[in-house]
Length: 580
Ligand code: CA
Ligand code: CA
Image (cartoon, rainbow, N blue to C red; front, top):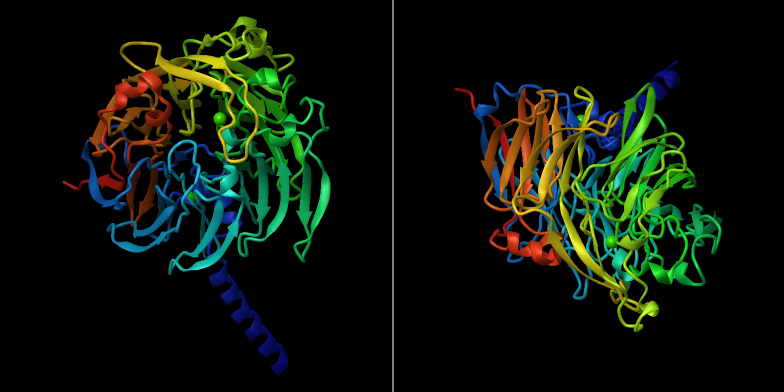
C-alpha cells in the first residue's frame, strides 16, 4: 500500500515535470489556427491559412485600432525585415535581419532578451540578409541563420541550447525560412538556389538538433535516415537517376527549398516547394528536371516522397515553385492551393497531388497558354523560352520578353485563406523581363545562372495588386492596386477583414468580401512581412514587422527606380482597439 502511494506520488511528480518540460507540444501546434491566444507557427497554423477566428477588430471597430507599442531592431545594418512573429504566453519571438532573434513582452513591448548570431564574412544570401521567423517547440525557440546553421534557444532565458550546421555557406548555402514543426520533428529546407546547391528537406529531433532523415529534391541524389549513433543509412535515391536530367547536371541541380513547408494534420503530409533548377539556362538540362519548380508532399515520419506536382517543367525563367501550399476544404475534399511565381494559381488534391484547377492570377503570362487539366502540364509557348546560345554566336541566346518576371506573379509573401468567404487573398505583382541565356559552368560558391535579365513594370500606375481569388472559378472577386510591388504577406480574420502591408510603409485593412479599404497606418519604413493577430486578456492585438528591403531593391531592374525613395529601418509594431 505504502509502495503504491509512493509510486503514485512519483508518477504525479513526473507528470508535472513532464508537463513543465513539455512547453509547446505537437497538439498545440496542430491546433494553432483554432487557438487565438497564441501564434505558434508560420502561417497561424501549419496549414498556412493565415486566418484568425478573432472578430473584436472588424469593419465597425477598426477605426479605433491604434498603436500600443513599437520596438526598433536597432543595429547599424538594417535591410529587409520579413519576419512573422510568434506569440506564446504573452511573449513575442521575432527574428530580424542579420540573423537576430528578439523576445519581447507582447503587451508592453519591453525587450526580454536578444540573440545576435555571429556571422562570418562571405555569407551569400541571394536576396538580402532577411529571416522569415522562428519555430517554437517544448522550451525552445529555433531559427536558421544566413551562414546555414540552426540555433535553438531557451525561450525564457535566450541561452543557446543547441546549434547545428546545415551546410557550407561557402558553397552558397544559407537559411532564411521559418522552420516547420510536424509530428515531433523539425523540418527545414535550404536556401542557395542561384549557386547550384542541392535542394533538400531535413528532419531533426527538435530537442537535440540531431538529424533524423534527409530527402534530396533533385532526382538522382540518395536519401538517408540516421540511426541512434548518428550513422547514415541509405533510404533510396529520389526518383530515377538521369530520368529527367542529362549527364551530370543533376549533381548541381538547385531546387532549393528556401521558403520552408506547410503541414496538414489531416493528410499527415508535409508540403515543400522547390526552386529553380540550376543553372537558369534551360538548354543545358533538357528534360523536366525533377523535382525542381514543384510542390513535393513528404511522409513526415519516413521522409519519403508521396507525390509531386511540377508547376514549371524544364524551367527557363527562374520560376521557383517554392510558394506555400495552403491546404483547405473544397467540395468535400482536402485540397491545397498555390499561387506560383509562374503566374498560375493551382488547386491540387492534397492527398494525391492530382490537379483540380489551374488559372492565371496575373494579367499577362507569356510562357504558357494554359495548364492542361487532364495531364497537369503547361501548354508551352515555344517562342516564349529564352534561346539557346549555341544556336547563334555561342555567347548570347535570343532574348525574349517574358511575363511574369522572375520575381514572380507572387514571390515569398504568403497569401491567406478565409473559410468564411472561401477566397484566397493573394499579394500579386504585374511585371515582365527581358531575359537571355549565356554559357555557364559550375564553380563552387559562384552564381550559377547562365542568364541575363532586366525587369520592367507592365503598367504605369501599379505593379502590386492584392487580389481576392475564388479557387473554384478562378474569378478575381476584387483587387486593391499598389504602386510599388507587394512583398509582405496577408492575414484574414473572422472580423471579415484582410490585413496586408505595402513597401510604401502602410499596414492596410480591407473588407474581406468587398475589398473596400477601411483602415491604414504608416509604419515609417516599407512592409515586406506578414501581419499576425492574437488575443490577450480579452483584447485583440494586431502586429506587423516593418523594414524595407528584400529582393526588389537588389534585382528589380527598372522597377528599382519606382522604389528607390523608400527608407530602410527595422521595427515591430503592435496595435489594439483604443477604448474611448
Ligand atoms: Ca494559436
Ligand atoms: Ca531562384
